[in-house]
Length: 165
Image 1: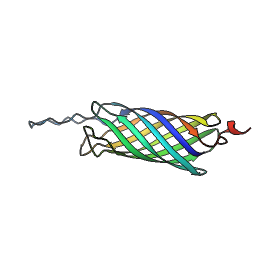
Image 2: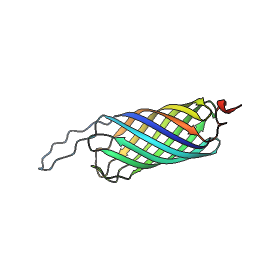
Image 3: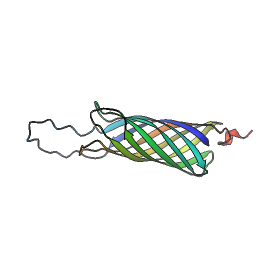
Image 4: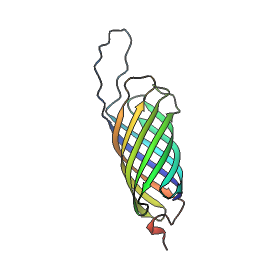
């Protein structure tokens, strides 16, 4: 694989239920995040061991109005059965870098998926995402389960079976 670039999109569902707490104050209590979220991720990395790669990049996540969250993230990738159809596990950690309704947000997550070779330097991938968010000091932190789809562009044209001339 050597160097790689991986843009992907995801769509998820917040599985945590909002608890009804009576508001006995004059202050506005923020709503819990919506049930549906989506985002875009762009990761660049290097595969320096046969079954392990390390990447870093940017993630944009939309949870609800004014919750436009941008994270810088790190992503170790564990690769099983390298080749034309490989199974992978991405472990993700991100720290918020923009200002939004919440500040100092972070997330942890995993993505489990399959990568299918498409050409010499290109693979498509699909997977399931599991992400837990800590939205600043809020007690209404979402846990997202969803789907992810992306492509991976490789610097090594012989990484997939299509590269063999």
